[in-house]
Length: 264
Image 1 (cartoon, one colour):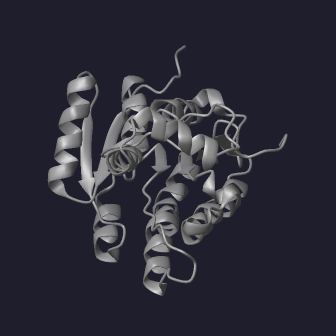
Image 2: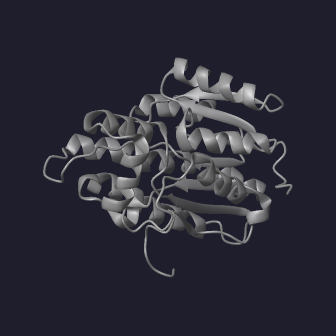
């Protein structure tokens, strides 16, 4: 299927690995000029080199920015060219009880997870409206609805994304611009791989056994009973980035393997 994305330009925040890198690769494979983002020049260059090797026919570049640093964000925004597709993917979390989650923890997660999307959208949305075409995507999480006890602050930021995305979508009425959110479930990112590896070593069990136990004891509501591959999330984001998704606006799309119950 031709997604009609050739020669579009996309910026994906937090895209040196995991879901962000998978989204970047999916867009690059469709002929999109991709701008990656990472916190350090070394990590960013490594991601650019890997993606360019995997998709040599597409233009790949990158911009560094730590979204906890407002000065770096301002520099990033000044250096952004015209963007057709904005994917707000960058995110951090702290696994702590509510009582031990500090104000600083809350502030950092709000700055990175929520305000990054606020600032980037505020910069890029007006030009998208003027051109009468554009896509803004927010990568939220199943935690916006499931809210684990040790991730209350993280979940709050991911839930706030839904309101932000819907509100921005309402400002695009009658235009060719859309704003949507995806809510991935537990995904096999490098962070998840490290978690499984550490559990495997500490408990003397195989990684598959640890993974299976996670879905039997922790994420018991999952219908697929496995971690998602980052590509499974990326495939939906790539579609929503395309002209073929023009009827989808203001939506929150779950990609959680059925972890959140309900029919809507």
